[in-house]
Length: 297
Image (cartoon, rainbow, N blue to C red; front, side, top):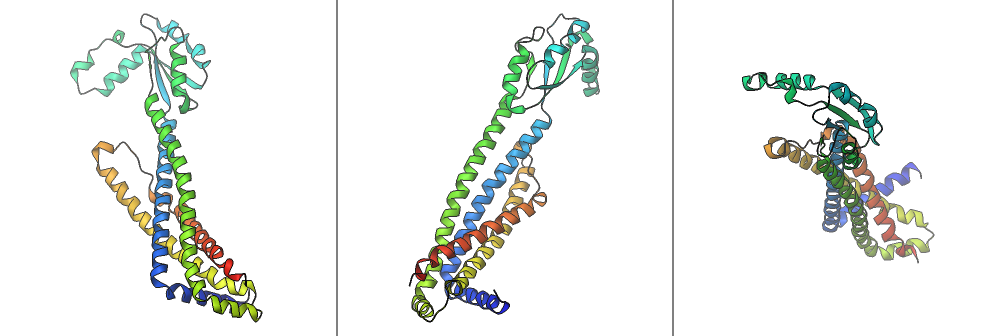
């Protein structure tokens, strides 16, 4: 494609876009809405994965040794605990170490400073390989002789909840992206069809005098491309503003301050690339779909 043809096609595409101002505006607006919905669900999935990854980095449970066992007997459980599936590492904590840590934690409270070491039990801090199997691992640890049922502290319900949220968000995200992408292409194609319908006689004459399909098609492709780019730019900045508003709301709310939101500054490049690619694909795909039948002259 020559430089002259490139600028000709760009100019024709821009003229076509602005000649149908309302329909172009409606098409861009709906595409922006679709991009925002797709982007929102994608960012929800990203944050769910980030929270799960943070939990997995703190995937430690406490296994308390049965009462009455001496320190030597408690230390002897290490091999049995390491043999449990999904256990990566075990660290023994004696009742004296646990008591000292407790007193340090409440050093300003005289009531807790006089507690004898015998009030605390020997325990193991256990690191897991995969947080997704926390419930099964807890049951296996409780089955180890010397531990017993109810002596393992684990946040398996929270872990299972986050895993469910991640999986559901991922599935919903994929389905919505597919559906909204098809809807956006359909809307963009209908907008381009208005332009091609108004110019159907001109297209027929151009075909009869020897114009190639490519020469006729390119202005409409650029029209869709420009509308897709405009949609992506508008959608990106709206998504940025919406995300920051939600992040500030979460940070200022004491009831949900345990939820951490991934800073937009760390992911904005990925969001921009995805929005740009989706916008251009929607625009170009809609254009190619709309112009195809008008070239059959």
